[in-house]
Length: 167
Image (cartoon, rainbow, N blue to C red; front, side, top):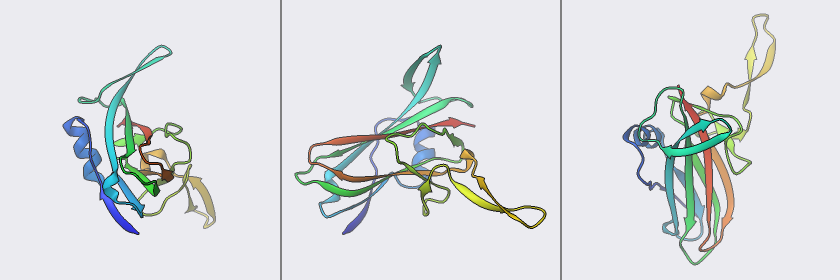
């Protein structure tokens, strides 16, 4: 099986492009079919709330405390089903992942981009008295989200998304 990295994006602001793509990768794909058959389109939106209504607008300019929604649409442009797609979304250090905002469900999280686990992430810490305690990792430390897409049929698409707040 071939491993490749694929990154394509639509227009997003210079700050967001640098922060997102400078972090690492958009997606790793393991597939028997050609990885050229998988196209992706990254979009970043600023989330504007007015009462109970939400609007997504261009995220060209973002201020501290504003919420950004990243959406990555994966499209299988080939003639064969693609299998074992690992869609990875970096979360730059300047952003804090918002719990419960990832879709579809089942996303895993990572602090380092290598080890992924179910959310919420937990770790053991040694207390002053020497005992160990399991604690939740703060969402501000999450650096990657990953979805396992078992298969994507020819001509079909899927969108993964998550929100984060600019610190």
